[in-house]
Length: 242
Image 1 (cartoon, one colour):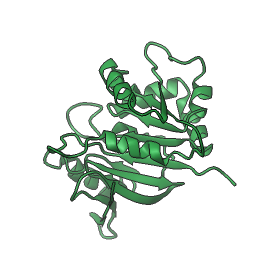
Image 2 (tube, one colour):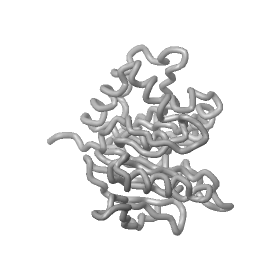
Image 3 (cartoon, helix red, strand yellow):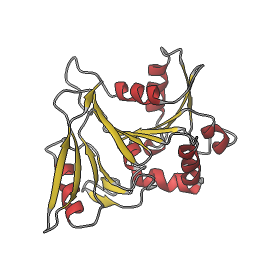
Image 4 (tube, helix red, strand yellow):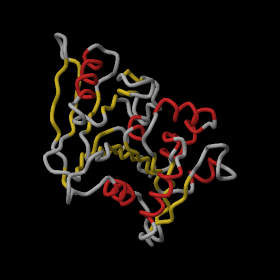
């Protein structure tokens, strides 16, 4: 039997309300999805999109310090890879956790190091691919990004393991991403795809959406596609609370 290919792509909560779970709950859910029958789960945190920012690395390692069931490693690519063999290291993991930031810069660096092919091999071998924001967009064909500047621009150069576009932070900051994403789908710049509001994660099995989950009440995911006579049409997806 072939290994199950899984992706968990989410929009982290940028501003959790008082008493609300923060985005680490989505990270923990991603780790829980990793298929390991026994022993400690092996998770690799990949902060390329944020330029391997030490503050984020320290934060992630401190959050996992209380998880005795998880062995966390970090793959830095600046100024050079932090492991002797990237392919060997990533294929030995159960789940890859990809930080947000600049999806354009991240994929440029990944491709320079051959990570596009390695990520595909990991996915095919059953390593769960997970990430938030830029770490969600990267597995899809494209989406909306602010990697080029303050304006929101189309991003059409994703790894494309999932044959859809992806809209992240779909309800944040007056919803400009929501409007731009739907316009680009309507115009055919982006293919049909799934959008996630903050706090919502999309769990794919193979290339099919298995379910949406949420750590915040009242949140949704959306299927967005071009309408036959112009414009777009959308269908809400009620997520399962976790």
